[in-house]
Figure 1 (cartoon, rainbow over the protein chains, first blue to last red):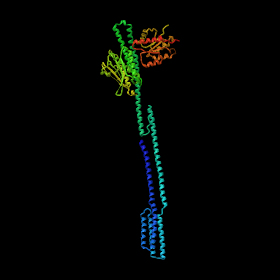
Figure 2 (figure 1 turned 120 degrees about the horizontal axis):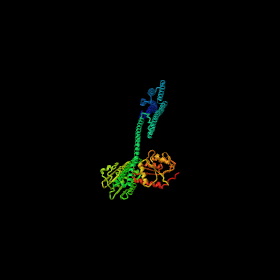
Figure 3 (figure 1 turned 90 degrees about the vertical axis):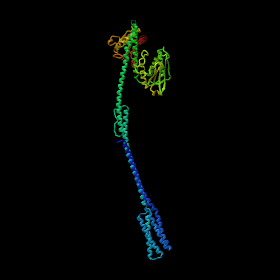
Figure 4 (figure 1 turned 135 degrees about the vertical axis):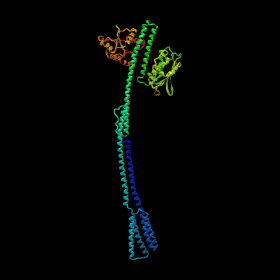
Length: 490
Length: 146
């Protein structure tokens, strides 16, 4: 069952309980209202009606006595209106007096009225004697019967009132008990379901969190158990799938990494043997050529000696090529350090070295102050060594050689530049500048290995930067480079 | 006083002859004993194997040690030399064509007294050997033999 369905059940149970309580309250309220209506509709009107009917009854008797005293037959006839008004009062107050009681009142009151009227008429006619006394006694009895009926009908029945209020109280108490029972039942049900659900969720979430922690540590030996078929179960299954994919990717990566390490080790061994084994025969060529030149020069003519010098310079050039290749290979190895580097200081040191090596040349250096960068100082020093050595070399035939090192902002990027006014190059071949063994000049014009700029480019790329050049034959060349811009800002 | 021996540990005949030539050019007349590999070098130093009859107390003035050797490498030879009481303070100069940083580091870590990269240019090599000769054969006092 899904979590959504379980939650719906809990909310449904709570809602059903609420509805039940509401309906019960309404039902009990209706019963209360009925009891109150009974009190209001029957008992209260009777309470008001009783004294009025008593007064009517009194007035009826008194009016007939007055008519007798006044010897007025007409007044006696008019007393009938009082009787009618009394009956009218009973008829217009339904519910106050029950129908049989009303009928009894009418019956006894009519009997009394007829008898009283008859006695009154005979008194006006001044009749006396034994029959008259008997009629008067009968009339007195009928009056008592009517008064009793009236009294019984209009007397407030406290027993009944108490019964009604009792019913209301009982209904209220029952309602309260029911409400408490239903509310408590619902609460218990909702609580039970909630705790069960939250335990269930907590359990799988704990499993999930432990599983994710394992995956985070790179431990994929144990997948997360899928115990439910709800949303959390789906999530767990997806997490397991993700872990499986991650594991296979990591395995693949580890294999690739191992392969790379092996390849790198092989390359390192190769570089080592290149350095060691290729240089040894060159030493022999150079050394014995020199021995020939020194010890056997008498037996060699000018051409022979020149050839031997050629042999020596070729061997030395090859040694330079080997050194260049080795340094190029070294640059891709090892960690790239990230440190603040003062390019101004490095450039000035390089310039000093160049001046010391060739004191007969007079080159003007213009090196901007405070060229700050973030990078590997040793590698950036190689960059400046190569770029400045190139500028130094290619300004050889320039009467007033000038080399500039500066920086500028281009499109919010910090660009370093090394400019010279030397031999320059044809922009057509600009793309070949940075290739290994690519040269734009012959060995006779300008000596070189064709490795320096390739090395520079590799260093700049390791710093996540770019390098490019602009130049014109006979006017000079400018080399631009950037370093990782995000780091330079920090 | 008879001049002490220079032990040259070098597998490459060309380099051996060049070294001898450079020594000769610098008028360094010490007799040179050549060992072709690391094992032979240790045999000589500890007077065993082919050199069993030698007096082991008669130590060379200096050992010129190539790094890349058959059997035992130069570094292994150096470690064995430094581990033995008799040769603990024997001057050892590493002579190699490799500029590799790792060689340099392990060379010094194993107790090399000096380190010389053999340049391709013979004149530079001769100059390096000259300075070496001045330092280890003339200026530096060898430890007394026991």
